[in-house]
Image (cartoon, rainbow, N blue to C red; front, side):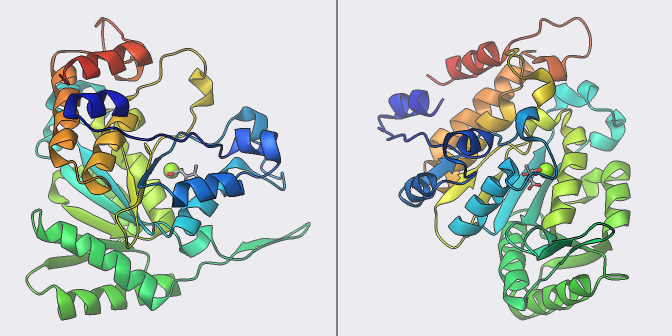
Length: 330
Ligand code: IPM
Ligand code: MG
């Protein structure tokens, strides 16, 4: 796809393929090898496939594929994970949510990606276990700024999601968020919402959300939920950004081992991630828009992968869907 876009626009991209996750464990015993890190640091943008699989799924294994992804996110300092949820009207039938609730849904979840319980100290003995959740003021300030800037260029509504009735980290989150918006983003409408209520409202009145900012684990959970608005987990892209233009781009779905090797995975989340890569890291706005429009057009024309099919439409394979989208990019 990138090569194709490059050719259409007269750009030459230099690609380097590197190992991460399960295959990296098999090859060098490390889910995030030094060569991979070095190559990512050397690149303007990183496009990432999924990291896991049944072969490496033992939750008690000392080395797991997911550690590779977490290490990469942390090492690259990409603390802001942008997960846009856009609805294609034509896919309303693929969503389990009632049609009328989906009208006007266009939201962006900004997930904190390099802190919180994902990265805290873990302990385990025979009868107990713990995962430490820590947030620092600077981590909250910088993610809130990213979300607030996005909201300023959208509808101007920011919803910060936490669990401040229970968690100390959430109480700090709420205070810092309120302060940062008051000090730096006057005019922005800020609302705080508890994560359990947010989970409900995402289904009940999803069109009311504009930008949601939340901590690492809440963002992980809420975006899988939000993907059902779009009809399939396979539709959602993401961009992980830090303080530079270098970014890490990946669909929000995992390796889908249940359908592995059958050529039926939905490539749309990955292709939409390519569009985000062109936009945010390479500043190729026109190319990004072209990819997004091609994707929209192909869906509008009725092309469906298996996860999106609702009746007796012809179902396209991963390759066929990708080719259909590429044909719209002259
Ligand atoms: C995601 C995934 C990852 C996460 C896993 C694979 C570590 O679920 O990107 O949403 O939990 O962040
Ligand atoms: Mg997830």
